[in-house]
Length: 379
Image 1 (cartoon, rainbow, N blue to C red):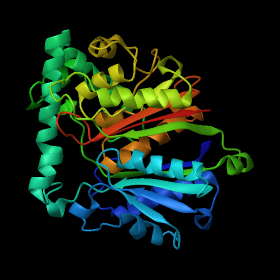
Image 2: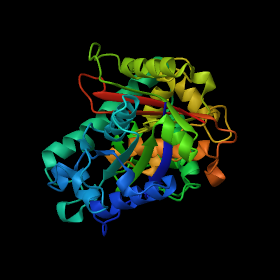
Image 3: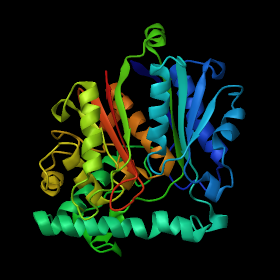
């Protein structure tokens, strides 16, 4: 079994004055301090970054950041896997410890997206706009329209995802958007790709999140009691691009994670999912087994996925309100769940949380996701 000993997180937002070294270093130092270990005790590091090569011209962000923190002479693996870059780094570290390759590993997800000198995300415009600015909202808008057509999902139900997200973020000091927004305000916002409005699309951000993972032996020595029961990474099968309302890859990744952990969705107390767009949370809730296919919109409007409901989803504010520094997101989801399992989430604490699930996906090919991860934690 692999355990979480330390967690670290920076506030997400537009930190124009800060370099990626400063942002990543802040998260690492926080995780090391929380774990009560020194840099020299780390035996390997897995560093996720998706856009550094394109925006900053650095293809080895991990060594750049960690060398300045005294983490030298150890294996450093740089990971790029779209929005699952961070959770893929987690998967690699988890497997390295399970295989006996190391007893203590660092996982860092870090992204610097707000670079005014390059027009925020306008450098390499064709590549970045295709990935983040134009194609992605349009593809999710198509999914939204199809879901509305097949299941009677309403725009108000999708907007309810955002209203909940903003409400949760008000209680998260590290969230980017900390302001209330009603369903009506969400629906009346500027259109991005019909029916999705601006508030239904996650914002770019700068930020970092870090974890210190340890083996059973070190967990016993340090008193670490948060277990990572399963981490599953899959790519899509790209077999049915016309099925816009069912993510088979999402379903299969979750099914495997549940099987490995020996539990089902009914035993999960808190979920963080990849709500890059309002419709995404609805689709993910269906794929994770929180409701029947086609019922995600009604679930979102019911209040069952809000704090205090049957199964709270994205109590952090999620990507929609916490922000989405691409490679940091998957690690930040784990930090959020660990915080709740420790009972340290303050006003947004999910009462009695003992188990949590983090789901992330990234990229698009033939109507399917290029990568999908699901991790299950318990205390």
